[in-house]
Every structure is written in C-alpha cells, then in structure tokens.
Amino acid sequence: MGMFTKEENSWMLYDWANSAYSIIITTAVFPLYYKSVASNAGVSLSHSTAYLGYTVAIATFILAMIGPILGTIADYQGLKKKFFLFFFVMGSAATASLAFVPGDNWLWLLMIYTITAIGFHGANIFYDAFLVDVTREERMNTISARGFGLGYIGSTIPFILSIAIILLADKGILPLATSNASRLAFIITAIWWFSFTIPMLKNVVQLHGIEREPKLLSGSFRRLGQTFKEIRKYRTVFLFLLAYFFYIDGVGTIISMSTAYGTDLGISATSLLIILFVTQVVAAPFAILYGRLAQKFTGKKMLYVGIGVYIIVCIYAFFLKTTMDFWVLAMLVATSQGGIQALSRSYFAQLVPKEKSNEFFGFYNIFGKFASVMGPLLLGVTAQLTGSSAYGVFSLVILFIIGGTLLAFVPESRERAV
Image (cartoon, rainbow, N blue to C red; front, side, top):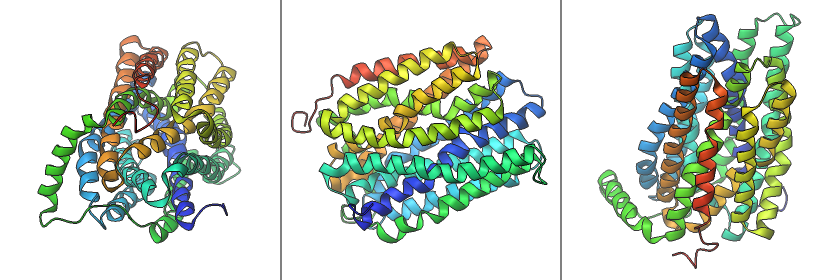
C-alpha cells in the first residue's frame, strides 16, 4: 500500500478490522449459533428466522433515529473521533459479551446482538464520514473500494481461524463443545476488531468541521432542521438518497439473512461456513475491480451493474434446492456485494459539503437504516405468512427495481445537479 498516505492506509485498515464482525457476527457464525440455540429451545425454523429479521429491524431503527443528530453534533471540530470511539468500544465489547450468554437463552442472544449492531453501524457513520478527511475527491472511489477489498481479505483470517476451531470441535479433535467453539469465535472477532482499529485512532484526524457553539445540542438540532430543509437544494444528493434507500435495503437484508435462509433450506453448517469463506475471498478483488471500473465508466454505471446482479440473486434464490445452488448464489453476491457498498459511499462523499460531512452522512445513515428496517420486516412477515423463507427473499426484487429506477434520475455530476 506504498502508493497511499499514512492517513489513507489507516482509514482503509479499519475496513480490515471491522469486516471480521460483518462475516462472523452478521453473516456466518452468529446466525448459525443463534439458529441452533433457538431450535434447541423449540422455536421453529421460519419463526427463528423471522425473529432475527425483527431484531435487525429494531437495531437499524434505533440507528436511523439517532444517526442524523449524532452526525450533526460530530461535525463540530474535534468531536468526530470521540463519537467514533464510543460506538467502536460499545460494539467490540458487546461482541465479546456474546460468548458469555448462558445456555439456550436465544432471547438474550438477540438482545446483546442488538447492542453489537448499534455499535458496529454507529461507528461506521463516523468512519465513512472520515473519508473526506483522509483523501482528495478524485481518489475517493479508489480509496473506498480498496477499503472494502482489504476488509474482505482481512476478514478471512479470523474467519478461517473460527471455522477451523468450530470444525475441529465438531469432529471431536478439539476438547470443546461446538457451542463453545462458536463462542470462542465471538471473542476472536472482538480482539481482531479492537487490535486493527488502533492505527485509525492514532493517525486519522478530523480536518473539516465547523466551530463549536456554546450550546452544542440545541445548535445541532437547529442545524439539522436547516439541513433537512436545504437538502432538497442538493438535487443529486436528494435523488441519490431516495435511490439508495431502496437498493441498499435489499443488499443489507441479503447480507444479514443469507445464513439463516441457507439453514432453512437444509444446508449444513459446515457447507455454509465454507461457502461464506470462499465468498469473502472472491469478493475482495471484485470490490477493487468496481473501484477501477468506476474510474472508467463512472460510479453510477457500476452501481447499475451491482443492482442488476442483485435482482438476479433474488430471483435465483427463490428456486434454490441444493447446496450447489447456494454456491452459485453466493458467488453472484460476491461479485457485487463490496462494490455496490463502496461506490455508494464514495459517490455520496463526492456530493456533500466537506465541512458538513458528518451531518450529511447522518442522513445517508438514516436513509440506509430506515431502509434496513423495511427489508428484514418484509422478509420476516412474508416468511411467517407463507411458512417459507423463499418468498421473503424473492420479495426483495421490488426494492432493487425501485432503487434502480430512481437512480436513473440522478445526474452524473455535482455541477449538473446542485
């Protein structure tokens, strides 16, 4: 990474750090562990999947409510990193706490999981907003995409370690119960997340911001109201957020619910862990590729590519029957998962005023999080009504269609839109 500055490298390394949470807690080990605990407690497969969906919806609703005001307060000079630190510590500590939830208490698992999700996504509000502080506008697509690429690569290390411990325990080679091996994976995740966040804390500083006012809270609410009224003046920003609201909902729901869906289909935990590991490996170069292609074809065109791939994913998921089908589905997701998130982040960062980046990323967060309430609820309700998770996943197609349609009205450049 010699071509990048110390600040850029430290910022990108946080993707390396927190992506362990994304794969182990959000996508792989925790959902499998939770499904096992809930099943042992007598909860049906479709209902346990629905409860997980409701939990994701609750966590994202909380973040959607507090995100904009937190971002507005953090726009004052010297506050961005303090808020980042608070949520990072909350998330990593709660992640470690998952290992100590007793017995078959699936409800407590979901409650602690809610705290981890608030910490993880809350820290990301400020992490994303730091992009304007660490690099120039013309490098944002590259830096954002490489951050996601590093995240996929880095997350494979604790994931491999976790998989090895779980599989060895399952086969009786390690003197551990499989449940305890999963709990150890939660601790590994917290340690990895904490350790590789240190460069971010040491080297990244807030460059853009506004001067502090005597009454920070009341001033923040006043500025938030002004920005909400003025955001419609930023035509590109407003249209992009509307499009983002829908398509990122589908992306987030698929990420958080894919393992539970695979379990409902009867795919073994071992197969799911291996598939998810390969997905991480494949996703890394594709995330970087999206960044390079965006430089050639524009970020908007590459966002359309990602949306198109996800529409295919939702349709294909409805017809899944075998483990091989799930392999195909996972590889399709791997081609676009990181790219669509990275380019959404960098495209938005290029649009917003740098001195108000936290405030605008607060709106970016509220649109994304309110959307993430809708998707899991849609999947959960559909699964319960039909008794099949397949219909819930298929219903997500409409979110990508609406998001892609709205994106068509987003101009290519800031100059044409403001």
